[in-house]
Amino acid sequence: MPLRSPGSGRTAHDAVRHPLFARRYARFSTVAETRLGLAGVRERLLAGLTGRIVEIGAGGGLNFAHYPGTVAEVVAIEPERLLRHKAREAALRAEVPVDVVPGCAEALPVKSEAFDAAVLSLVLCSVRDVPRALGEVRRVLRPGGEVRFFEHGVGGGPAMRLTRRVLDRTVWPALNGGCHLSRDPVAALRAAGFEVRCCRPVRIPASGPALPHSYCALGSARRPAPDGPPGAH
Image (cartoon, rainbow, N blue to C red; front, side, top):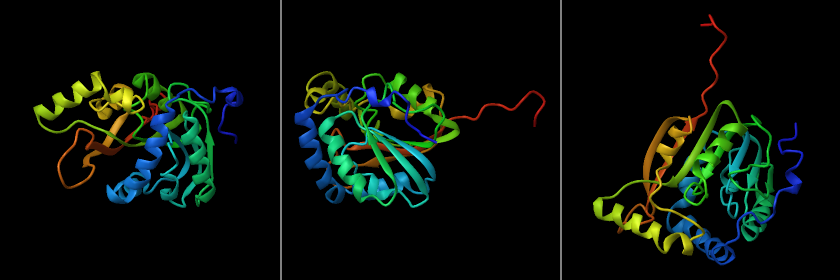
């Protein structure tokens, strides 16, 4: 069954344009896999997934090498042209089938209720409209489908929280592709109607001084299945 919408080929190929940030992010994220321990986080994020997966904001495709063999197919959405090119290169090396396509989180170019799970990896911090993006995630998941998330999260003391809010209102989004450090992904998922099943704080890096972008959340949520017919138990 095709998972992309019939009109997905007409999706704007440059829905997001941060070319300078994309180049810098591509270099930094590769280094961070080993030096900051992100490869291990990706392993935990994706462990146990099965079936058809939609990954939203795939970046340069660093998750692809960590999908387990139980995954039948990954449709990876990436709006930034340079990162999409790197993701397609990574898809060729992946051990599971990966289709990298243009699109943005607020208007996913895929069919409704077509996926068993959705992966959100450092993407909710930078989408323009979080409720709309999560509404799209809910649309494309089958009832009972799972969301795996690794996102910037809340944490730290009052001074750190104030620092992140100040950065969000000044230079940080402009320098980092629209990223915001003080969004609460767990609260956003609950507000969008997902059942958060587990969540653990993660610091990147795990040791050393905490930086404003060190506080993250790793977990899973579920799109509730509809109730059965009246009288069913």
